[in-house]
Length: 115
Length: 384
Image 1 (cartoon, chains in turn blue, orange):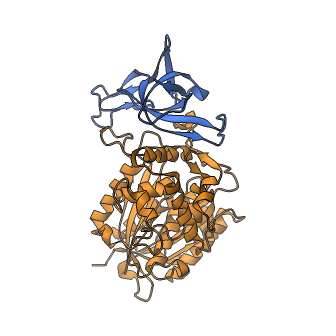
Image 2 (cartoon, rainbow over the protein chains, first blue to last red):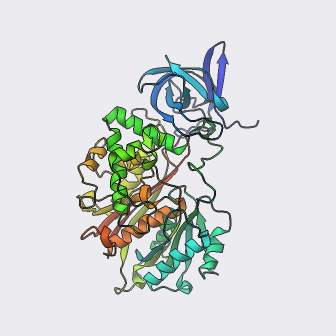
Image 3 (spheres, one colour):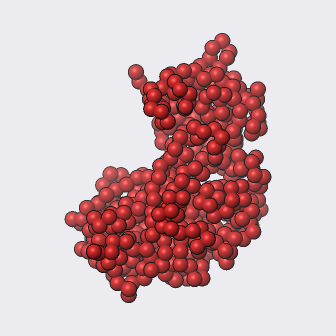
């Protein structure tokens, strides 16, 4: 299997989630590749995390970066029972408020809106 | 039994900023000054530890050859922004453990001829692939601090004002100028709430330090003992314990500093001067809190009250810091170390913190998603 380094958004009939890895004992969750749990050493399971969470923090990137244009709003969203994932925001996010993944943006980045 | 405590006996640096010098020339400038200050010849060196991030393979050997140093074991290390500090740490530990008597730590980076804009992140990092750049990551820490602790844009800008003001007295600094809070806030926006005067610049530069076992040093030389130095690497971030939800880097800096203070038996109350990794203004606030220099959530107020200014009770970044001196990644740790050596030996000129005897050095490296940082090195130093 060739490892994908990019985040992978999964569309299940309009319910979006993020593919990732989870410790079977629930210690850790990650959107990026991790073979073993850093706490208990268990082999991780590949799972799809539901795309609902809480905005941890946000910024607007004012300079372009490769294929990503200037004035792009991004946020870290803590998925419930899942990892912290970087999302593109379609609306101005508020830290601590609920958000959900609603689609896929540039380079496969999750797009999120207020829930 | 020989006294193997590691002691700094000389330091040197190039100027910092955009310049036409090659990596070789920058290293020659720094190494020549350090060896002359320490009264050490190239033939006295037992080993060299060199930190760099983006240099081509072979740069260390080519640059040291240019400095007249051949036939000596050379170890090249990479630890992101803390590469130079890691070189210092490894050199100091090799002396402390009796492996070597005299070593040279070097850091170098040549950036301005190929990097435009932010430092390129790891192209295989999951968040970098979604367009995250380091200013954005620090900006999200700043936004989080605004949310949690009421830190204001003016609080952030004050760090830039302070450090640029400090750099006015540093002839080697990249940017030396007096700015107002309004000028900082009105400078080019990079990642809200950070503006360009709150971001360290792309730089060229080199630094070097001679580290010797105390038993072979002379009291005629200006000496600073490395009481302890520690390297730690990042933990899972955000913490597996979701209740311990600190911003990026804070956990790693705190853990590294706690170990240094324990091993050196230095209390923060004894510290006279500090050089920390202010790659961005929010970084200095987070760092002084994580190091225990002030309570969590109070770093911004602590700074604006003047405690971290030159003349304050705990001056932070009297050199001007990364924000003003510049940030040539591999050289930064050695530039910080050089500043503290000069401070602790009374050679800091107009920047001198009166009576400085004890210092802390902190460099934070990292761009890896999912970790509290890449690697952090902290050292405790004291005049001998």
